[in-house]
Image (cartoon, rainbow, N blue to C red):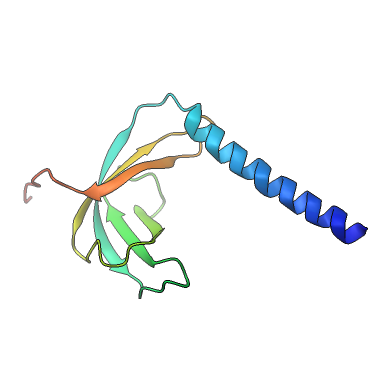
Length: 112
């Protein structure tokens, strides 16, 4: 009986977490921000692992300590190292940023 109760608690936490993540995005009224990113690295692709892990590097406007973002994407060959991407994020209703979209950066970058 204790095992069943433990499974129920874990399930409730998982469902509750999913509901909070959905509410964070659904209730979010913050403006979208487009971050210019570059694919810095890509792990080997594995269908069993759910795709490849990409590290995206950006400038000081990327709200992480090292200005990078790691993403596991189910598509292995869509992006290549050195490719410029536009990552659109929003702040989240509960202060937890979330990704709106990711795609090729179609705006020409100026060389500085």
